[in-house]
Image 1: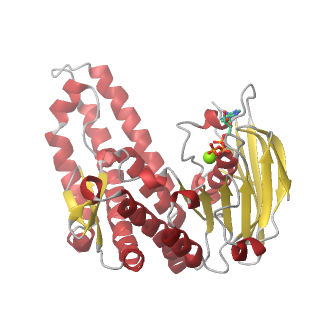
Image 2 (image 1 turned 90 degrees about the horizontal axis):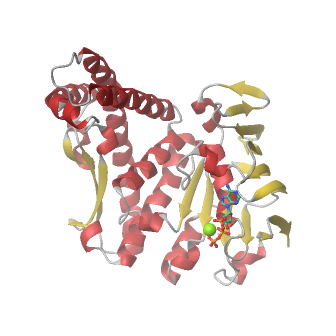
Length: 377
Ligand SMILES: Nc1ncnc2c1ncn2[C@@H]1O[C@H](COP(=O)(O)OP(=O)(O)OP(=O)(O)O)[C@@H](O)[C@H]1O
Ligand SMILES: [Mg+2]
């Protein structure tokens, strides 16, 4: 997979930018606050319809403008694909593939597959459960684009349920029959999301463990999914949990929490409350791992995402590396750069070229970002 051209209008600090890419290795250099992360964010948005930083889409629009647009020309399996998204809140975003309107997000995001690795990811283990769920959900969407529809549906039902709970205002005597209907729908979608997450982590863990051992030499990585419905699920035991079992447990747990939810006026249980924990040789990484060990985990996860995509979809995802090289020591830097397949288009941002060996810089297309514009060096 290859991005040939990117066009952005009124996105973040950019008014109107067009870039043609002619290489597998692309480097954007620029001082702080020039728009390096913004540029990768635009590419990432085309592959996920989500941003790693913005809480809502309107943050992506250039200040004092109402509408923004990102376009790209992609080459996938030797076929050219044109992607075009217009963000214009509060209207629905407009999605076009090869000039044709698409209503489903999955039909859009299935065209471009990326793995994004930012300095923020390095804090994944110390971050919030929401950060970890977001990483997991976005990673799943790259492999199973239809998953985005399930997530959207779950969030929609949850919002409606929360509005209803607020309307009950803690009144336990009120007629709460509508709550059963929301709970039934939430259980069906939520159990499916839980099931997919557990299965994904199981597959990802198998690859990440190998990468992790190659970097750390002696350490064993394991991942546990902390479900608010079925408890802690070691990825190795995923076969004990099928979709029906999770659905049944979802319904039981929602019923148990019904009174508490009415009193608190919000939904207190479901896959929007879940978390993921990581262990090195059986000790929880969040509590005990050193900075370097935590970085090795994240690096292994990101490389596992790339390998998993290659294995499942038979494509090389585009790798977006936002400033991460400077944060990694020599060993991890080399491991990362050497682990990237020949055919993987890699877009890297960096303040300067100091972190790159001459050998790497030989075949790189370098752009400089300065004063809200981009020029090829
Ligand atoms: N919606 C927006 N409209 C206009 N400008 C914005 C918008 N959102 C962010 N910016 C500006 O974009 C600038 C560049 O941000 P960005 O995070 O891409 O910089 P960067 O080059 O990655 O910097 P660093 O090296 O510090 O990571 C920021 O100074 C920010 O004020
Ligand atoms: Mg940045």
